Length: 216
Image 1 (spheres, one colour):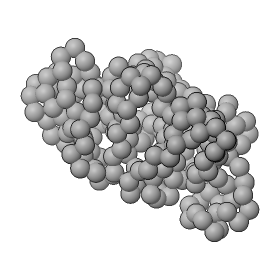
Image 2 (cartoon, one colour):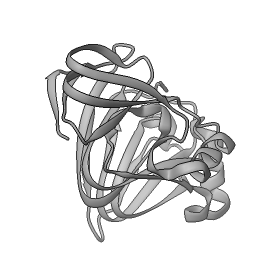
Image 3 (cartoon, helix red, strand yellow):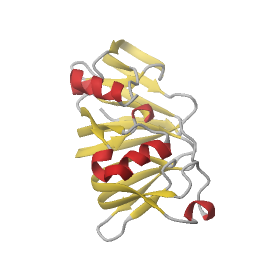
Image 4 (tube, one colour):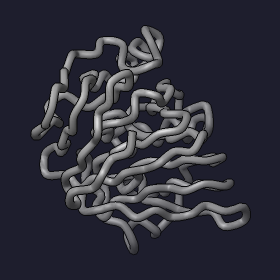
């Protein structure tokens, strides 16, 4: 279910019978046709375990199930919107950055500390984000929110990407991440609150970075 970008802060989705999408509550701006919006207590295809995981992670972002026949326009808080198309891979994104996503995508949660040990756990404290992150896997589109626009940076073997933890939005592909210290790096380059830390991503995939160190 593709999203059409109306402008940098609004997207439009086509809803067809037999298919559904999920959106953050309060994200619907306008719609045409016969479209219904109902609260989704399970948080997508992740089911009850996904919901429990999100609550443990303080990521119980309320979702709405969108069904019917018509078109819906989405936006929220004047944030910039980036549409990410998945072709069978997995997107890792903080729950509060999700604006809307294709209902065909499989949703789950992942404990970020498992990728980086203690440093992965520190990342959650430094960035102000949860230790868990939301995963969306399959074929479909995801609309995510960010401050000041988003740039996609490719990650290739042997060419790691280092990101300010506050500017990190999402990543996909076969990517490992760890939080590392770099004395002087934050003072010279970044302006966020995670002084002395940078998020290092390696492998094969892409990372999405916002043009601000502000959280949503």
